[in-house]
Amino acid sequence: MTILERRDANAIAHLRMNAPERLNALSDEMLAALQEQIDALQGDSSIKAVVLSGAGKAFCAGHDIRQMTAGREAADGGKSYFQDLFARCTSVMLGLQRLPQPVIAQVHGIATAAGCQLVASCDLAVAADDTRFGVNGVNIGLFCSTPMVALSRNIPRKHAFELLTTGEFMTATRAAELGLINRAVPGSDLEGETLKLAETIAGKLVSAVKIGKEAYYRQLEMPLEEAYAYTSDVIVENLMHRDTIEGLNAFIEKRPPNWDTD
Image 1 (cartoon, rainbow, N blue to C red):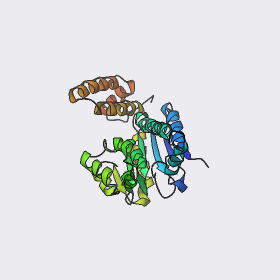
Image 2 (cartoon, rainbow, N blue to C red):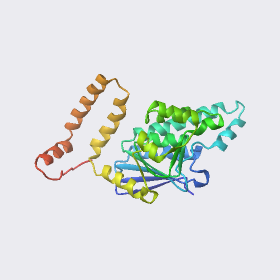
Image 3 (cartoon, rainbow, N blue to C red):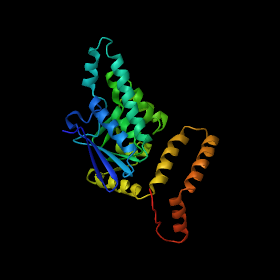
Image 4 (cartoon, rainbow, N blue to C red):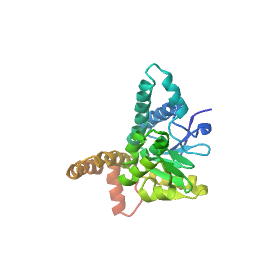
């Protein structure tokens, strides 16, 4: 069985975590498979959008607790293993945002702890309306410190802190209200609505989306004046692209653009 399945169709890469018996936990094997696909997608110009989903009854339940517990058998009580584990997990989360293609999480069932972090690390997310989200580590004495990084950059700080300190679940409707996901839809519509979003993005000029995604995340970390200076340079670069010139001319001439390259 392949722990992470990939299917490409119409310039969209569909990645499906396939460990349903473990609720698609981010085991060592799952993290390695995700990293492998992130590395492959980085240079794949044929792919314009990525959809990440989970097999079985859940999107992702976070780290593999049994595997983490087994790591404690080392002489140092697992400290080196844990340090390496979270470094690898961080690489995956950052890798999703550094891909040139927008990544859409297609979420159902539950997305908890590092699974919630995974949703927050994707560029966009669509969830079934009965999905539950949580950073529940505090319930077993482990504060979700690394999931907190992505979560607190998606939703307002007081709401993030409440979730982190209470260990309570959040509904998909509430997740949409706070901005963790883009929308909550009936479960029967989840795949179709996610695909519709992916197809819309895949229909745009690849070079413009690539430039824009990189700039989006970089400017978020800048002071306001610096962000305007940086994005001014970015938009000038974008305007010099020959396909952008064609897009502007097509708009003026009221015709579809004839983009030669992506």
